Image 1 (cartoon, rainbow, N blue to C red):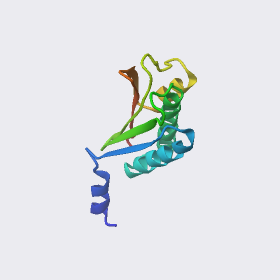
Image 2: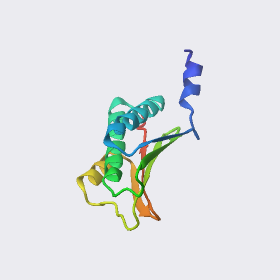
Image 3: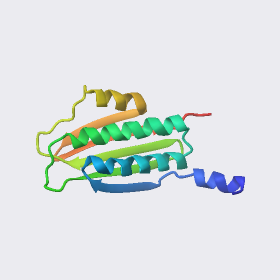
Length: 137
């Protein structure tokens, strides 16, 4: 691939990938693999990819720990690709009144590995949004 073509591949501003899997721990490997593949496309370093995978894994684990709102709950991951980073929104339906644990070890991992993190549980949906920006080399 010529240098000009590589530069085109790196320009992804506005690309969005959405993945929905059953809300079961066995499917987290699919989410982690998608996260790593998209981060590699953005030319994240190996360490940044591993940090992002860990953060997304923790976000999913936090949501899987909430009481489900349906008999067959799903976990939806939306990946927004930007030239300087990746924003991931993980969401699942949950019962009214469910709350995200904001002082857990998992939350500490999220805030350590991502640039920005926020989470809400509102109107029957729990949602965690995290952004990881690529370091400048």
